[in-house]
Length: 206
Image (cartoon, rainbow, N blue to C red; front, side):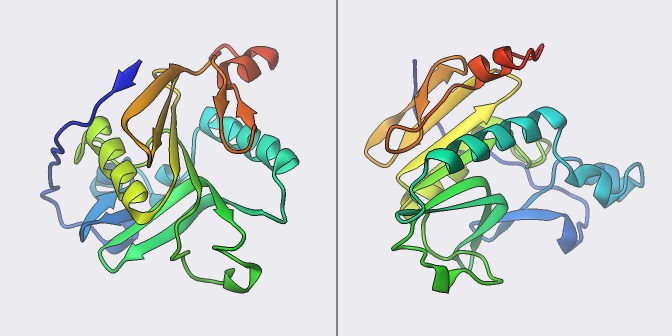
C-alpha cells in the first residue's frame, strides 16, 4: 500500500502558551505537547502530559534493545529518549530512536546540545504533537519532509492506534504503509516486526 504526499493544513492555537509547552519548532512555528490545553485550563499539570503510554514505551524499548544488539557500534551511534535535532534556527525536532553514522556524529560531537547533523534513520512511535492544532496526517507529513530534506535517509512511523508502519525514504517520493505484523528493515538487515513481538509477549494490542 502506498501513500502519496498531501497538502499541509494546521490550525494555530488562540491561547497564550508558555514556552515550556512547546514540543518542537517547525518553520518558526511552535508545535505544542499533546494535552497542553488541559495544562492551560488547570485540569492537568505539565508532568501529567509529558509521559508516554505504557504501550508506546514498551514498543520503543523493544526497538532500542533489538537494534542495539545488532548494530555495529563502530559504524553507528544510537540515540533515544526524544533526542533533539537542530535543523536550523527555525526548526528543532525530537525523535524516539535516532541512528547516526558514527562518522557523521563522532563521540567528540556528543555533548549537552541538540544534534545538528542528520541521522541516517529516524523512528517515531505515535504522535506527541497536540491534534487540536495540527492534524496527525499533516504533522507526520510535515515532520517527515523536514527530516528528509535535512538529510535523513529513512523515516519510520509506528502508530499504535492504526497498527501501521509507515516508511519514507529520500530515494522515493511515495511512502510505504504496512500492517505492523509485517517485517520492516531498519538498516543493514536489522528487521523489526511489532505485531509479531506483541503477539509473542501475549499483548492484547497485537
